[in-house]
Length: 64
Image (cartoon, one colour):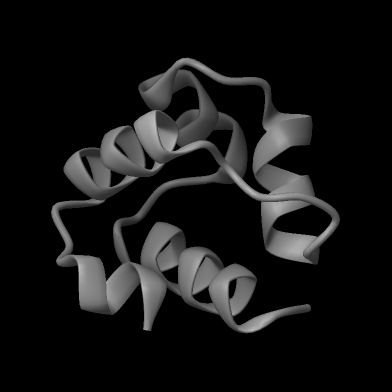
């Protein structure tokens, strides 16, 4: 797992969400969220904005 993936997993968990629920909330497939967490690929800038808004976190909390 990479730094972004670890942060994302923690933010999702701290928000009381599952990967499935989080994926639905931001309009992506759960497999995409899993790929980000595992470091296989990263989200686009537009998706990063949706992630940040959905989790109510800062850019620093999300990106480190």
